[in-house]
Length: 303
Image (cartoon, rainbow, N blue to C red; front, side, top):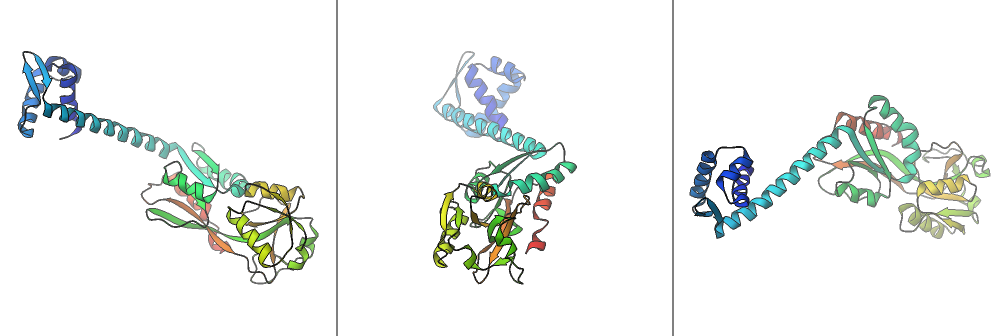
């Protein structure tokens, strides 16, 4: 049976008449009558009681119609979903990323993307990796930039960049002047002794950077004074820029020329791979493929 079969029987049931149902369906009465006879023969039970020109559902007919309505409803839902997916696929890309990457995306990635695809809309949202993955699984996002997430089947995970735990300071900080380049460290290096007792800005311990910051301060007895806790990486960098303190953070591409990253000598700081994730069965449009290319182009250079 196909959807049309159910539509025909449901129409007869709703009108209680072959003639009125045929008019609604834009077919002849004789064609609808033959269809009903063929369907009842296939099912092996009568679907209607005939009382003159009136058609009343039998018990089997009631079950057929109830099931038919459910199937018709699901078919409409699927058609609407596919139509919406087709529309979104052509004109909209939904991307979620950690909030610290916003400036980099807005000033570097997105301008280049719009040069090639000016008619595509990007729905961009900064969020935690955990919430971004939830949005992707719920179908609210097309792709996400995340770190430190458990890999689950049914998704592509593409390395986008390396992220290192770093000390964020202002460019005019004396710590920058005292730093030096050492092979094997991702950023200029300073002695941990130089930051002991300094004011530090943190994120909540529930976040990746916040938890690592807490462990570093405790493990290496840095005796740093927490002067502020902020909710996200972007606010943390803004606070550093405002000279409220220094901060440990999993590095994000820096656009602000007034912020510098430093490494700590003799202290092993974590590094992670930022990954671009999307569903394995996602059919990528040319615009999506280009965005993937832009977001992952520097991985080899940074790894």
